Image (cartoon, rainbow, N blue to C red; front, side):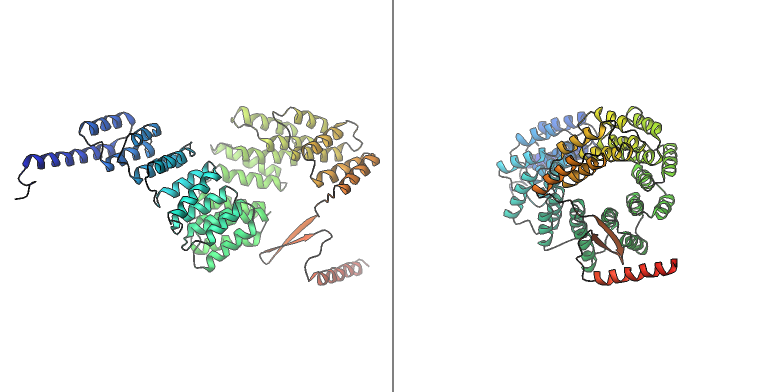
Length: 506
């Protein structure tokens, strides 16, 4: 006869343990705050179930992922446990990935290794996400080393997060290398590498991967479209942007707020404000970013009145503006010469909406004053900034001095040029700008000396650049540098057109 069958007391004991465990698990699932949780934990101890690995994992899960997060309690549980499993530690690391202290995840990972608990493929996605959030390049590389040692590089989720991690840490070559070596890829993998390229200003590479993605049989999703539209916005490739918009319509993709905002931004930055406004007006729901990119687009293309009217409409829609909104508003004031309005919006930004002005906002105010012929007031405003002005602000003001105070009678120009060369002494463009300013104010000797310094230091100003879009491709032209083989044909055509215009005038 079986021993357990002949011992009803032992059977009852096991049954009680099982029922008590189920009861504790049910209560944990219903638990919403920490006080009842601590009571459930006490019951688990009293019932002798505190060594149960599954119950421990569920306790850690509650501490790390529930709204009543308590990471210190979770760490205490793990510190005093001899039965923790990889799942317990994974939940703790996952919790840090959605917290304000992602750097703690790597400390937890080290504790996990010291206890000789082997990480698995579910450990690294959230650990790498934390390293990207921190960002912590050294720790992320160490995690990558562990991935390699454990033979987990072939896991698509681990690979995706490695690509994302390297992209966020500005190591785009490592991100691309990781992606190219992946044996298995998903749409998320392609999105990660395209995002890594675009976020690190390698727009052509990002668009190239987007094209390859389709060639390899992967259908882009809404995220893919948002990223490639951002690339189109940055390089001004309206043709490709329109192609993406057509693809969105043809595929019947959901035009959610994020995707529609990316379309508005692309059209606005490319100068196609009619299309931007059309997409904007047809959107069912708009967030602060949608309003902001539309206002900024209108302002940057000289439609100041329309931008400010849209801002008032935004305020009536009960959406609170953000720092980008006010950048657009100040830009509109600059184009329209609205100095008093600019001061008022700058004041309201901080004192009404609680947005601390950034360098770009101070720069926008300097631009407003400079364009309005008030270089001395602009200089006083710049000196009152709570931080050192950056070179962009100085160049803005120096440009205003060249326009409105040619002879530097106010003495502002000299102060600004000295500050500019102090802040950025190795930028050739600054030397050229200052030399031109000195020449315009009649200080020929100083201008000549500055150009001599440039020559001695072998500093060359970057050639002027322009570009045109043709057939969905961007063609760049540099002043004094003809690199394309068909330039002779282009110049011949220009000669023909010039002759034609002369004959028409005759």
